[in-house]
Image (cartoon, rainbow, N blue to C red):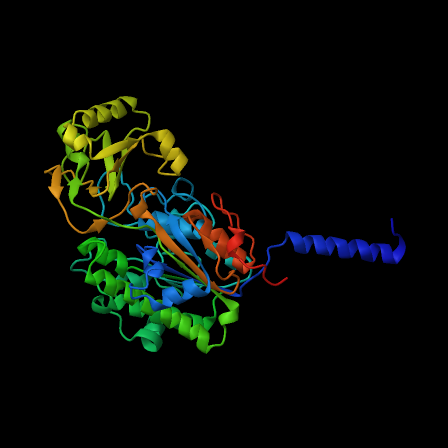
Length: 455
């Protein structure tokens, strides 16, 4: 063993080298994560789709042939997984809307206080970085430096759509600054959920925030592709226009990074949350529970014992008393009593399977619809009705539920590909790009997608 001053220096050098080997390796100074709601892999794999920016990033970087979502494959549970690396049972956002014991609600789970595990913005700030977010779900009140959250009035058809966004934007004065410097006056007509003009404003806000503040992590959420598929189906001219609008918004940010001569320092991560399936039939299983005397028909549940919390391709049975096994048996009897033609439209997902999927831990069991069938938790007849357009919320292994992933720029290994990427692996991959400590409870880094990066 070496001794004296030289020996101590060698030992110190070895300790420092070992610490460097254990420490995360930074590959990018900034990561920009753009979520395209209801992104499908063909948007970047098939050049007939109007997405030149997305296709360029895919060509220059890495891509997944498909990304497996969560159950239910819905926007808010999936987006929370994207930034936590945790499945819904662990992170706590198990649906788009909260289940309330006394009544149905059209409010969504907007507040970040619902998230039970650390998110990427927490890890970035703990490492001394800064964060920005534009339209990302479940971020009202989040510890994000510049935050324009996803929020709207519970009954927004005739309400002021912009007021809740303005009130929830932080820090104070940011909303007015964005209107002055980036977007012009924001109104329901150019920032509402149903108009593709929103995508251009999201792109302008994200580009401005990056140029003005250089956040370490920038999140942006584009929703037009999902909205148009819901209204008109998977493939129609408006879906193509929505894809083009989302691509244009991302292009604004890419061009800003290029103009600042920062392409070699920035990683772009383009993600989706779920796919979509054309729908033709809606089932309302709460109508069956009302007929069996297990709940009441109305906005309020009344003296209820069991109710389905449903959205798209899934319905989860909730109990007023978690230990009411008789209510579970009665609900199963209601399901089994349905005519064969109805019963063939869905299957029961037992508690053990829900556990394996990381789904709602408070559900006694769930119903999973066959492709083309959707559930509603409305208790008002008829229990079977026609619908059109497209939906999601199904089991994530359905091919139509696959979403996408593209990574380009700093830290990615050009030409790498993944046949199937679990959605819970996105957050740890972002953390690995930034070289920050982050524990993803359910996800891992796919190292083959990343470059070795700088020491």
